[in-house]
Image (cartoon, rainbow, N blue to C red; front, side, top):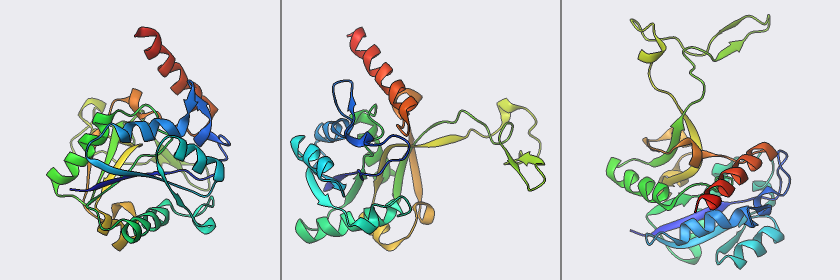
Length: 232
């Protein structure tokens, strides 16, 4: 089995400008994903897909290869799936075919190597097209998530299955995280969106599922890293 790890880090970020190389607890955010990938013997190569010279330099400094992403695949509206397809084709052209695609978004710096390893293993065990990481949801759509109509009337997002009346008996729901995506390259190339295939999952604890989108997420991640460092 040959695994290639990819980190997709474009220059634009409205929530937290420059976040991909913003120093987090002493090193660029991007380096956390690269360092986790380096811990895994299953991963043969690590690439950062980017449209930014500064991100490319930061990636090379940490020992990753760089895939220059076309401008049209690095806009706010460009689907990341298309960037995935571009990166896979790049590797197939320059290195050759591989069996497992692993995406490690830079925005999840608290992931562990075991999370990534578990996703790769689960992908194979389940014979699925893609494995993603989930964590228990803060909100339950059966009880406290609503949608509003044009008159500002609300209704629950989901209706409880027949015979269920208590929160404790409701189906468990999970948030999709950005901790890890492991997939078969041919699935990504042949389909257009994530849930077009057989999707399996691994569960990760909330602490490792922090996804940095804005300064408050960044502050939370830094506080967790500091607390872990102080406890050593």
